[in-house]
Image (cartoon, rainbow, N blue to C red):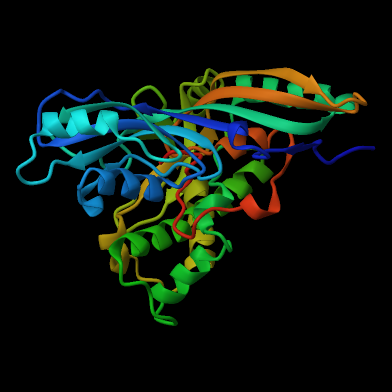
Length: 364
C-alpha cells in the first residue's frame, strides 16, 4: 500500500518558479522616493536592490522593499529608492526606467511620498512547474489540490524561515538566553527572533493538525475573520464552526511576543505548554519587545485562484510535468501548497535560503 506522497521536483530551471508580487497600493506620482518595479532572474532581492541603487547613485540602505523574493526563480517586485540630494524624483524615475543591468528588467518607475516597508504588499501570484510526477499517481496529486481548493491547507512556515542550515531558531534561543553572543545588526536580530517565533507557531500548528482542529474552531480559540483580519474569542462553538466551514473564520496560532493576545481554555493550555517547551521556563518575553511584540497567525491558509495542468510527459510517459497556478496572501509559503500534493524535491545546490531568508517565496 502506497502511503508516501508522489515525488515532484521543483526549481530545476529558473523559469520553473515564477512569482509576481501584488502591490498593496500604487505610487502617487509625487514625493521624494521612487517606486521601481522590476523582474529579476537568478538574483536575491538584496543583490537586486544593491545593483539598481548603485547604478542610479542611490544609497542601498535607504531602499525599501515589501518582502524577500527567491534567488532561484523569476520574480517581479517593487522597491523604493530615495532620490539623492540634488536629483529630482522625476529625473530619478526616468533614469531608473532606462537602467540596464544583467538579470534585471525594469518595467516602470514612479515617484511616491514614502519608502516601501516590509509587509507593504497584498500578496503574491505564483506559476510553478513540478517535474517528475509519476503518471500513475497524477490522480492522487489532483485530488490533493482539489482538497486544498475546498478546505485550505495548514499555514506552516516553510524551511526558508529557519535559514540555510535550519538552525536560526536554535541560534536565536542561545542568544536570547545569554548562552551565545547574538548578531549586532538589528535586522539580523529581528530575523533570528522571527525564526524562533515561527518554530513555536509551527509546533502548535502540528499539534492542531494531529488532533484535527487546525481548521475547526474550538471553545477559547482566537479566531481570525478572513475578510477583515479581526480577531475574536470563540464562545459559540456551533456557530463558529459553521462559519469556519464556510471559510469566514479560522483558528489562529501564536506569533509569541510580550504583547501577543492569548486564547482561553484548551487552546491556551496547548499554546502555553508548547511555547514553554520551545523557549524554556525562565524565558523573559519583555527582552524581545524591541524585536517585535507578537501577533496571531491563522492556522489555515486559503489558496486563491488555484488551478493546474499537465504540460508535458517524458518520452517513456512514466512521469508528468504539472504547472500549478495560485495566489497567496503575504506571509504564506508556496511550498506549503505544493507539499499538500507532492513530496517536494529540489536541486541540491539550490535548496534552502539565505540565512536571513524570509520566504522569498512567500513574500513577507
